[in-house]
Length: 535
View 1 (cartoon, rainbow, N blue to C red):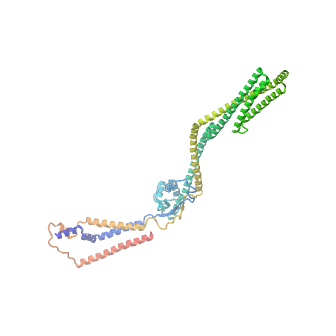
View 2 (view 1 turned 90 degrees about the horizontal axis):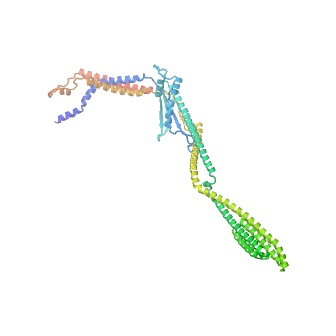
View 3 (view 1 turned 45 degrees about the vertical axis):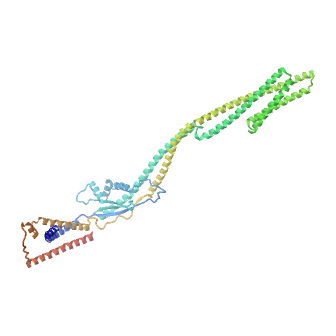
């Protein structure tokens, strides 16, 4: 049982069998390895050569701080580079370069313009360079051609196109933004003018009813009310004066028909004194409240002066009566002398009454005018909430238009500065770090890589050939295979009899193939050194 387990374990990993295969098939493997390597490596020297010239373009930030001038173009550098690339590798641009430098004219097959453009697009390579924050800081431009000078010249042309196109595109975008803002600003200016005209028209049609004039209207209304009160008070005083004058005139006329002049004069003097006291009392009251320029005080002083003059005339009449005697003749004479004085007093009272009536009419007219103004200002104040609401609606639209206009004006001013900065080439720009290189070694084919590839192809070919031959060989190569075919168990084995000649032949054969193996590996190493040396 242990022997059977050992045999099964050995059959699972038959190392001896693989050794036999290697001993039998290593010549085929070496020949296939060498042939495969030689074919691929030799073919690499007959492939068309292309040289690649490249340059590094640095993306420089704006020299003007963003706090001073804010750019008015898109900050997406990658998107702008993609647009620039599409513009530069467009059919028109590439055909112009192809025609100027007579590119792809040496090919055996006649190429159409579209095929030349596609070929050139494949030969152009653009690689972005990013920093640790994944931001683009530079990019490489390279071009492959069979002539190193052509590759260098085309790379230089492409680099200049990128630099100039970037400046032109940025300037066009900046000018476009400025023109757009100018148009929007002009529309905002017109809208603001319309809103301002509406507000001005509304304020003109509602002069005196505006919320800003409410305090003034209240002040004027208060002044008018005060004037109305004073005018009403003056009217009351004039009306009282009229009643007093009418009473005196009535008394004079009554005593003129029923009594003597002396009695009339004696009877009217207390009434005059009473009226004079009343006027002085009223004057004292008004003087404690107003100045001497107050119309009521001036009117009272005038009435007091007239009343005092009247009192003096009455007293003068009484004195003339006493000095004239008490006889019938004297009485008759006194009666005759008193008539002219009494008539003059009556005429004076009637004149004062007429003046008083004129004054009352003026006062009433003034009061009517003041009441009309008071009603007018009260109506204005009553209409003020509705006017304020309408004005607030108009002002809200004006304020919005003004804010929009101010914002656009600020943006337009900043955009003009940014456009000026772009015209002065002070914004973000591309700068070529090094001029396009002149390649000294071809970029394709890379003979060292082809040599490594040839070794891999040779190994694969050798394994394929050796394995294929082993698979197709139906001969029995070991005693195990013979035992597996026999229907019975092998009792004894006869060992292989090898003569001295066979041993020498096998030894010579091994030496030959060792030299062959050494030659193959040395040849591969020499080919690798040549590939490394010549590029």
